[in-house]
Image 1 (cartoon, helix red, strand yellow):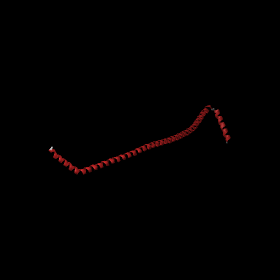
Image 2 (cartoon, rainbow, N blue to C red):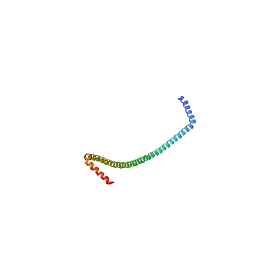
Image 3 (cartoon, one colour):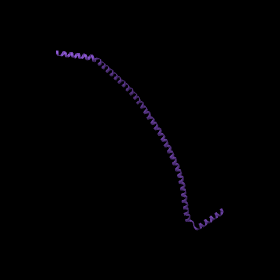
Image 4 (tube, rainbow, N blue to C red):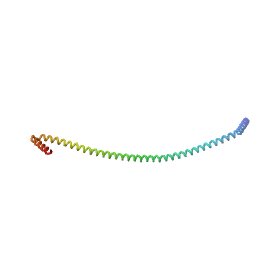
Length: 157
């Protein structure tokens, strides 16, 4: 045991000297570390509060965007309905114009066809009458027709 007394005294002296000289720097280190950790914790709390505020702001914006998006959808639907009505109205007007033009063209074509048919019918009737007259007229009929024509011409002069 005697052998342990001197080293124990040396150890106690070393620890006493170290405590005397290192107490202030160790206390300053612990104090500064305490301040640093506290400021970092406060900064974390501030950052968390700021993040929560931003999150709430973004959530509010998202809710507003949802409402705005619904409003835009409704506006687009109304514009589509309006465009559809305008297109249908224009199509109806165009179809009425087409029907009116078709009726006018049909009427004009009917008139033209009737006139052409009348001319063709008259020409055919004359041609047929001419053929019948040639076939049925005799020499006496020719003489009589000449005589009547001459009499008519003399009366008109």
